[in-house]
Length: 443
Ligand code: SF4
Image (cartoon, rainbow, N blue to C red):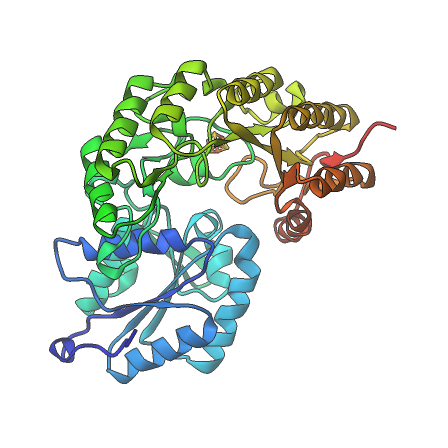
């Protein structure tokens, strides 16, 4: 893409937006691009999706050569923070220009704004980004100080200054992606989560309440995807069977209305996915009725279940809101209905002891014996969560051997080994306390 500004904005201050675009988190950039595309107050500024530092530098130089300010947007998860800070330093060594504004957003920057600013970013977009990106572009276009925008934080005399979080987004008033830029993805149908799992950043970032996109809005964006003749259609939500519900009880009528409408829109030759990547299902929501709906309307025959542990003690301690029996019941029901369950497990949660590990291993073994697969994770003390200062997850040699055996049979997959190193790096940055979550099998 050519980032050179068009001639009709040559005399203006309309910024070029350069996304430091990465595979992880790319959908966040699509959402922000959609917010700019749909801004009723002004046309979208030129936007570059720059992959890698060299591309970002080229895009920034080209925009500066046109005499315009540049907003470089960054969004990253906590494990990537140090790498992103290093990329920023390298970039600043090549281009240090007051017309370039480096803005970091997303869950990590929101949870750790001061540390993010100290790493060299000019501004942090605190909270959800749709309103903030519009406000920042408007401020730059008007030649105003972007620090006046709601939802930003900055550093002044070494201290954090902020106007607080951006307003929460009404999903219906923003697109879920950016069709005009050819950047699409899953349709976000629900944001926020009423559950409060102690390891999870979602309720902290997006609030402890469900905000659902209406059927009318989902229909609009399904049609936009159908116009591109995509084959696969997916939804984004923290908990698939919570669509339309305000509380813990699923509203299956709302789920059916969603699935029936989606099927009607996409027709029979395209594929609809529900309760699988990139969204999962809570085990206690799995019933024969819910499974029948998914079978009737969706094409996936895998189901992603949030399990996390075989230990009732740890499930309660982590505030998951279900017990281990619910996981086993959900997996059994799924298998009976012709789905292969992929069950998420989280190893090394704070306070995990040998008995907890034994319970988890026993549950994983029973599940895989019936035909389920395990998706393994290692506990990360993530900023913004109640367990941010807990000890990083560790996996003892005996458990590691067991997990590797499951993996060698194709019964387990996931990034659990890499996450163990990441967990220690994270904990080293933010200090730890409490009992280490050491995954050890009983001797
Ligand atoms: S883990 Fe899932 S259910 Fe729990 S708080 Fe996070 S998004 Fe909600």
